Length: 109
Image (cartoon, rainbow, N blue to C red):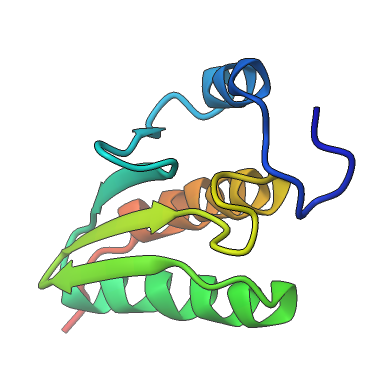
């Protein structure tokens, strides 16, 4: 069992956490979680990434991500712990919340 936010979660803890994060899944070939986000356009995707980057900097915890136009693929793991920690779960939950904002953004010209 993880005793801090930096301790690697046991598999049962990770499975329970993923029940609360239904859009996230275990990454293939490594101990990490991953999710693909899609937004209305590049501006919304970039705004999402900016919000996440500001939080990640405060948390001193940085995502692996890849962006093409309105899509953002995210992988979270705590390298020092060798797997997923509570920090990853907390960041994933925050990202889910930020993504809701991006879905509601519509371009206004």
